[in-house]
Image 1: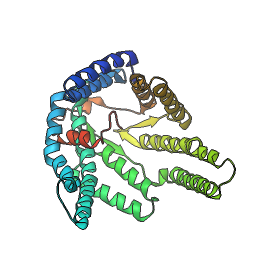
Image 2: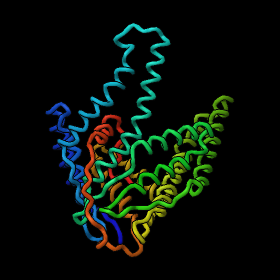
Image 3: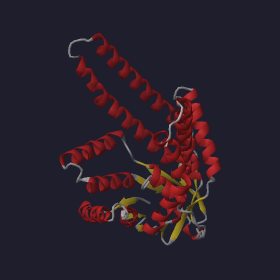
Length: 336
């Protein structure tokens, strides 16, 4: 069974123009309704095995979630980070408050990721049956803090394991109806591509630094190594990672398969950049369609799937996490 995307850039452009105008007229208030409208379009034009998805979220829910997030999370963060603007504080107290604000921001990000995913899953359906996410926020928070601590402690070498554990948590706690997705990946599966990319990055940056410090002839040309060498390398890593994660995700007895290659991914991003630069950003709808068509079109599911065993799950989710996702810009539209 394969996935496909049927949306058109021209249609999305018309929606985008209307959304921008209404958002400007309402001084930003229509942003949440515009976001829900775009999501409904993207999901309704995404099909799997011949049937299309549906998004049931509303602008009102996103707006209410944003207000809750501002009240519960936003005010404490901005109060701590901007206290020095309104109060005469000793330098050490200001530094302490800035540190607390940074810690608050760091802790809020995993809360936003989990609860936004929980909300979006409950608002997404296929063949009339909704998805759900049942992972506990506290468990993901522990994983997130431990992962970053070990990543910093090991100078970045633990990061592939952290990313894989994060992906395992998000995938393995996601359900379609009452049936669960499973993830069998391990950090060692992406360690070699990550190590090669990281080593190449350090080598290129060290070479650029040495050449510039030595003030050699045409030293500035060495800086071209950064976009022309590191850009493809990190895109190669992204393709390796995406393919590995999906190839180790299953539903029942069926396993997902991704056909992403770094060459196609590089061509996609290079084309998107060219379109945006040539149109001064007006090609955003076509870029969105290109991305959706590429990532969805490279995904398929192989093996037997007994849909008769799938029953509707009636759990609901708060929209506060979705509001926090908007507040801290950690949203993942059409994420894996």
